[in-house]
Length: 396
Image (tube, rainbow, N blue to C red; front, side, top):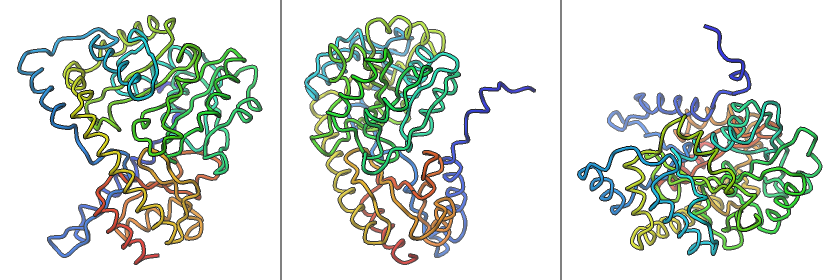
């Protein structure tokens, strides 16, 4: 069977390959506490250890019992779009018309829809290196060309307006950013985000911003949506968001886009054809995310993630695993392991075997120096983090 040539530009997702290896080792006798083994500690996957809070679970149960399981509009439940608009108003002081919000089958579907609507064959899209690998693969799947620009620790591992301007070519159509970022947990300074949006606007391009970790910002300086920098609160900036991270609904597969008015109909047409509509039960459940009781719980969890960061980063620095930039959001630390190994891939597998701690090598996240880095996720309990640090101290 002849495969489509577009697959040639999609790299394997090494994060998941490492996860499979860690899971296999975790099932071995040396990691089985019943035989005196040391259980594997998983700090490799970017999934909150919190689940959907009670009101969200109850809302899902009510929807099922009431038979509210039929298709919705491709753009999502009107009530949910209004709730999301209200969240932007109360959390960020932004006035976003509900009609510009498109609820999607996860942030992955949101990114796919945006790329299919905007990226033509051979169009270039600028991304930072390091960045989440799937983002560049969404561009490639739309037959565009992702262009990775090295982003240094001095630039918080993010693009800036100067690098965007220098790299812009006749084939460049836009930028795809992430703030806060996976794998670094760093955000783009709001003033710099404004300069990037202005530079892209001046060139007739589009600014796509992955903001799925925005709710998990720990520093008031950075906890602002890029939509504030679009004309008319986002008429030329597109935001991708999700119910997975801040709202703790990973497996529910629910996200959203905020797009200019002119993009709503094209995005709706694509969604109708690709997946008809997002999960109806997940949408009804998500309405409860915005209840005061749920928001209070999410804020408590955000404080817990901050406490984990404040424990883990100094501990890693003390072990000779420096974190060049303090993460200001999400739940990742981007760690330089070069003092211990020339290959982060080898380093990860050695720690898996000797410390029974699973982390992620930098190979997925870029091509300019990522081999020196590993990503640790602190979306795990404080007890697990403390145990992991002791094991790392033991073997390092």
